[in-house]
Image (cartoon, rainbow, N blue to C red; front, top):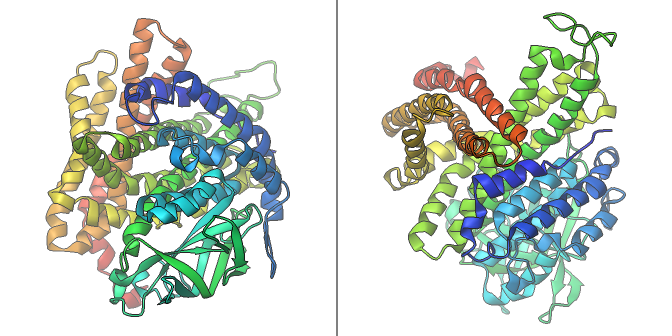
Length: 596
C-alpha cells in the first residue's frame, strides 16, 4: 500500500520565504493568515489527508461508485470522511466570511488542495466542484441567490457541479441543445442531457446545486446564445429549507479508466426548475469563472499525483536492492546495492522532484495573484494580477497535467514490473492522472487558448505581466556570484521563448494554422521557462538564507542542487522546442485527409 506525507517544509518555505505572504497582511484574509494560523492549518490539513483520506484511496479505486435508480453510492468510508471534512470547517477555508467562510487567501487553499489530491483525488472532486459552484454564484449571481445558496455551499452541507458537455458536443459548446423555457414566475424549465458530470450525483450531501448551460428559445445561434442556470437537485424554499425533488436525475455513471471513487454522471433534466444566473445569453462569461477555478485545481491535480508518486518511488528506490553501482560496490554489507545508486533511476526521481517543487511554486504564485486580483485596493494592481492569471492559467492547467502524467509514469518506472502491480498503488496514480489532461479543456485546447487568445489580447498586454518580471529578475541577478550560472540558463531559455513568441505573432497573423501547429510546443516551452523562473527565485532565496545562516542549511543546499539540476538537465529542452516551432505547419498540414 502506498504512503503519503504532506510536504509541509516546502509549503512553508514557499508561503513564508519565497512568496512572503506576510507582506500582504494589509489585504482582506491575509491579516488573518498569521504564521501561527498558517502552521496550524497546514498541520491539521496534513493530519486529515494522511490519516483520514489517504487510507481510503486504494479501496475506493477497487470498489468504485454504485448507481441505482435511487441515486449514487460513494465508496465505503467516504461518507464518514466527508462528515469529518465538513466538521473541521475545511469547505469554508477560503470562502467569504459573510457566507460563513474563513476568508483565508486562495494561496493557502491551493496548498491544502494539493494535500487532498495526493491523498485521495477521487474524494477531492466532490468538495472541489462545490467550490467552483460557490465561486460562480459569488461572482455572477444576484444578491438573493448568494444569500440562498452560498452559505450551504461554504459549509459543505450542499454539493455543486458544472454541467457543460452534451453527448454531441464537448469543446464546441455552440452546438449545445439543452433548452430553457421561461415560466410566469420568473423561473425556467430546463430540458436536456449532460454527460461527464463529475460529482453529479452522490450520497455525501443533502442537496447538489447544478450550474447548467442551456439555450433560451429566442437565443442567438452559437456560443453567444448560451445562458447559465442554477438547478438544485432538491428545490430550496425561500427560507433555505428543502422542498420537493426537482426534475433532475442521474441516468447512469461512467465506467472509467481511473478516478473510480468519483461519480462521473449522465444527468437528465426533464422540465427541471432552474433560475437564470447572470445575464441571458451571457452564460459562458459566468461559466468561465467556474472553469478558471477548476483549471487551477486540475493543474494542482497533476502536481498532487506527481508528489505522492515521487514519494513512493523514492522510498522504493532506497529499499530495492538490485545489481551493483557502476563505479563499484556501494553497499558491501548487502547482497546488492539499492537501485538509487544508478544514474538513470536518479534521473527519473530528480525529473519528478524538480517538476514537483517548481510546479508547486508556480501554482501558489498563480493563486497569490488571484488573491491580488480580488483583494488589492489598487485597481491597477488588480488589473495587472488578473492579466497575469489569465495568461498563465492555460499553462498551469496543461503543463502541470501533461508533465505530471509524465512524471507519475517515471515514478512507476522506478518500480520496474512491480509498478505495474496493483499492490504498490503506482498504476492507480497513472490511471488517475490521465484524466487531468482531458477535462476542463484538453491540453490542446489550452495551447490554442494561449496562442490564439492570450498572446494577442490587448496587443500583448497580458504577456507583459510575465515577460517583464522575468526580464527584470535576469538583469538584476545575472552577475550574482551565488546564482548567476542558474540565471544565465534561465536567460537563454527566456530568449528562446521570446523568439518563439515573435515567430508566432508574425506567422500566426498571416496564417492561423501556423500558430495552431506551434501551440502545444509553445505552451510546453512557456511552462518550462515559468518553472525556470520559479527555480531561479527559489535559488536566490535559499542562497541568501545560507549566507545569513538562517533556517535549515541542508534544506536550502538541497534546493540549490535541485535548482541546478532543473536548469541544466530539464530547461535546455526549450532549444529543441524552438526548433520544432520554427519548422512551421507544413510538416503537419502537408498530409491530405485520406493519408491518415
